[in-house]
Amino acid sequence: VERELLKLRDLPAQTLDGHRMRLKGNVEFIEEVASVHKHGGEGIGLYRTEMLFMNRGTLPTEEEQFQAYAALVKGMAPQPVTIRTLDIGGDKCLTDLDLSDEMNPALGVRAIRLSLRQPAVFKAQLRAILRASAFGEVKLFFPMVSGVAEVRAAKAILEEVKEELRGTHPFDEKVQVGIMIEIPSAVVIADLLAAEVDFFSVGTNDLIQYTLAIDRTNEHLSALFQPLHPAVLRSLKTIVDAAHAAGIEASICGEMAGDPEYLPILLGLGYDELSMNAVSIPRVKKIMRRCTLQEARTVALKALSFATAAEADAYLKGEIAARF
Ligand code: PEP
Ligand code: MG
Image 1 (cartoon, helix red, strand yellow):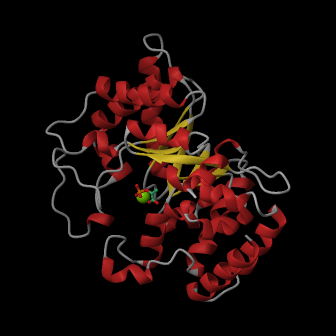
Image 2 (cartoon, protein in one colour):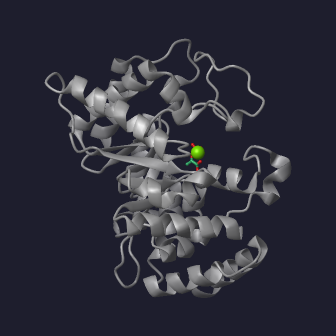
């Protein structure tokens, strides 16, 4: 089975009628680049930079980060690497940044909120990412954005960093800047956010957690962590529609992207790109290559019509069994 799936590596990620949707890999360690290549990923859609910061006594310097990002970009070139700025806090803790004990860490000082409060740490990371963009296509994006003010503040700091680098270090002036959509407020104002950035990437893990108020790490609630909950599916539609209305792309980099059962919905809703654990790419591609865009649109529309996740799940499982 593994060998059969690997044969898919060199076949294009497209539907029977030739519609393309890029499939990329999620990466936490540089060593995983090999797996992205092995499984036919068209780049890295999410590089989680947290691992560079965790399990160590001090923060990584700009130079250390630059070395890591540049190695990743060179290893993946000419395909693009999408680098997420630090998403520490909540389920990902860090002992060396002074995070006070919080009653609700998932709702606390984390991710972009932390970066905006620690501009020196944020700037060092942005400098390192920009410098790495001299070696291949880099896109950068910010996690846990809840509103436009945060995006503007982050972009203002990015501009300062660019200005500092001009004349001293080469970097890609046109590096694309995006945001994670993973907080319900960002879904509601997706049109406003789309006007500020170059792309959206949906973090379904957190989007489901915050939309349904289900702790993503609480195993007693796992049955209620429902990707097919109508509130989640409607959110996914709102996001991609807002992106396309503004002329920007939308991708998904949460776990939902790597589950073949959900492929027809995500394809049918019009997502431009899915990024997942690299080993899932062949299975997802296999389903994509067996349907037309129109079929996927029909499935997506039907899936959106159910009142409960269980009904949508039964419908999708039936479709996959019968048609794919
Ligand atoms: C997500 O929230 O879906 C996501 C991709 O980010 P993380 O799992 O790192 O929070
Ligand atoms: Mg997240």
